[in-house]
Length: 252
Image (cartoon, rainbow, N blue to C red; front, side, top):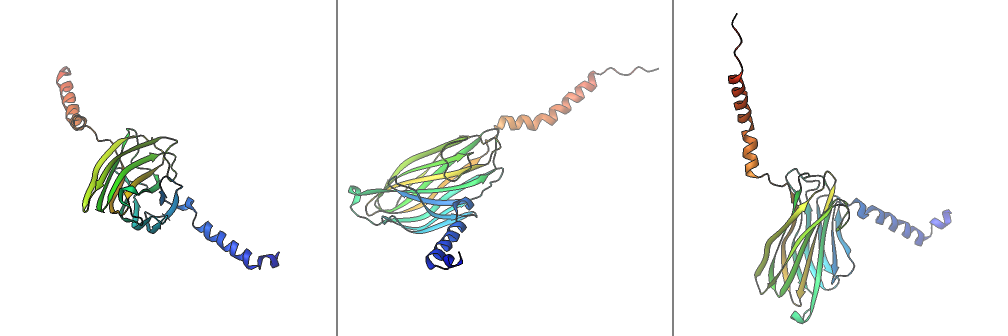
């Protein structure tokens, strides 16, 4: 047995197993993944903290400088958020609109406990880019899911919202819109996932200014706030009226 372990190939395999075990996705609180043209998703960067960062070449088609994913998991009573942004992406292929490829950027984080429901919370997303050269078509989608796993887009209670836009021409910007829907975790932990699909003409260079996913409490209507504010005064008025209507004690 000892002679078997001394073989270099076996030792290398064991070392590799240890390294792989130390970077398992199960320990990640936030992760950035990529895919190209709807193909298989692969890990870019993962972290047990609140920030994950990736820089490098993706699939030989895109040069990505500083993909930054952030999260405030487990959230606060007023806000849960997750972002992808500060990406500078340049295509490594030419050909203009006759040669297009789509870079899919995924950011996901887990273990959100706030805000919670009832009443239902609001799942909200925004996206914006700045086109340096070329043209880009963007679809940005956000998911919240009580399956509480990375990149969950179904199962449990899952809500999604998103929108699309196009940007072309040098130094032009686009997006800066938003979409929202209702989400009801009802006390369960949940994950947030955002997926940015960026279809780029050959020769495109773009800055992904931001892709944001958030969960916020449902605002209380102003009329309800006023009614609740007036309850102490109303209670005092009723108490005084009852005092006035109460019979006076007989004098002996």
